[in-house]
Image (tube, rainbow, N blue to C red):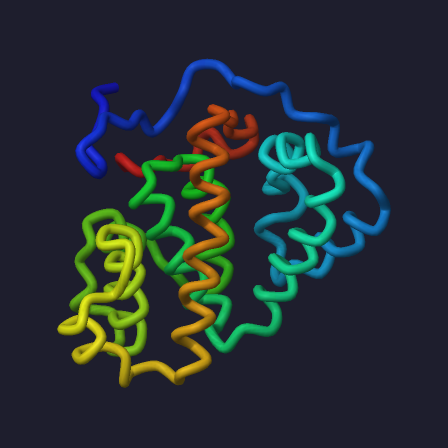
Length: 203
């Protein structure tokens, strides 16, 4: 597979070998498992459980627990709906060329109403057929990643489509998936076998 260009550098959507062997999630503390059980929907549970990236994050157990609590609480309490969150997360997979993020969240997105046509639009950054609020969320997501901020003209055009708290939540959500995407890319985290058949970012 040819590398793709992102921010002036070659990035491969998949990597051949993991740089850190994931620790066994069966050794997770019960309190962590209780937190993860609160994740909305079924997509990140069962065969979709992101055991490999969580196994990498387990290398620092003192930070993992508080992060998991923050991550899952955000999913449940932020003003963005689960569908809106999944649009952002899938787009983050595209922006960072992370097939791990993409393949894990395609089933979640489908569970919350994202269809195959919308998945293709997310890949291509074609947002015209999304409703205005979702267009705003996606454009602002791209802006945050590509510009490292929100430019004045983009803010003027799109910020009024969201509540003030939604704008804060959006920055927080994007930041969470910068962590996940970079962790997956830098550590070359492998997609679990059960998800390999899901088409990747390249379709």
